[in-house]
Image 1 (cartoon, rainbow, N blue to C red):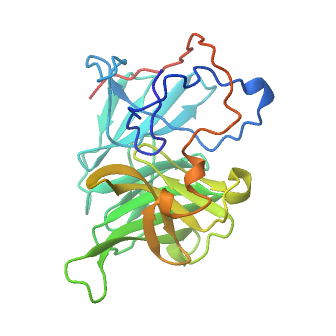
Image 2 (image 1 turned 180 degrees about the vertical axis):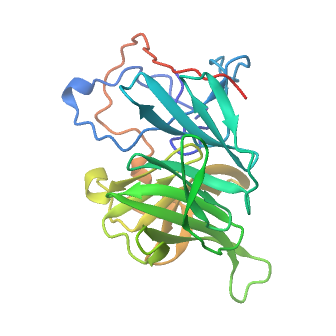
Length: 282
């Protein structure tokens, strides 16, 4: 059994020997936060002996027609790439783009993509694009995430700390899409919502449902200092204070990830069931 970081997919390597092998869902209330789709190269084994090495980018997934056929959208070397199960092949965008793409998402039955300048398009199944917003952000990271029926874009960038030479702080600006006006409007307060931005997924949740102390924050991977060593971990950005740091520094947040909650009680092993959809590598 392997336990993965929910945002970076890195494996936890120091689990207790008596860590449970089964979660008994019969007596639990299950809250679905969102799906995650990962492509794997089927002819290469990962370091855990799993079936293939995952691609580094998020995949947007759509069921077509009666549900037997699917389409997937991902970013390949800054360009859009589409896979359709009916045709059993990948299609790579051959039209020039003003800049490389940053992220993709399925939102209300349509594929959306945003490039590093914030230019936002709807992507058709033929890889044709329809311009939705012509933005002019600087070339930092953009993440798309759905929250309460709205499409949000999170603009992630570094800024210099005032009065401290060469010290940089990671910052997050949130925008909401107004498709009719064709503009990204700034969002200062997420209210009760909490955003989770991972390498291969992005989703939002209610702080009350999670049992978190407050909303209006963003979870993201970042480097955490521990005993003089720097490692990739889960950090939180508080939109009220503008501070970004490891979850351990924020009471009421760290418990969302570690240690495991008390209701994990079963110690019995059980076979794993896996349902995979394989797509050929490009």
